[in-house]
Length: 191
Image (cartoon, one colour):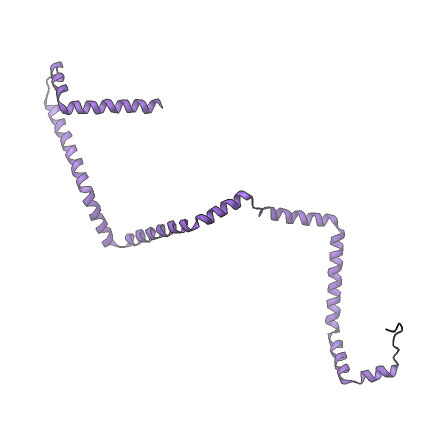
């Protein structure tokens, strides 16, 4: 390689400029010079801004503190990650439960809109309630009858009448129940 630069005569430049390809390239370059100039100026401004920011330690400190404070909200602790993975492990079961709940909600919603289904459900409930209702009515009738009889009797209850009553199996059963109930209540209240 030669240390000296190749010297070109001015005639050689004129010869190169007479080439149509070179002329077209120069024309395109001249047309793009304003854009090139704007790009170079914008790059210089950006470089000046970056240089001034890097020299301004206080601004850098403020910038990094803001970034740190914003990112610290997203810091995830190990416990949170463990809980997340546990939740993800249980997700299939939760989806099953939610699916069942969704089906139940859909059923209840359709039941609320369908009068025929409501009547069918009400009739079904009556079939279960009727025996219980009959027993309650029977119990109420027994108590009312006992109340009427007690109001009709005016003679005092003697010790001998109580003694006779104590031998009655129904009274004995009721007294045992009452005694057991009082024992259980005493145990529960002492705890």
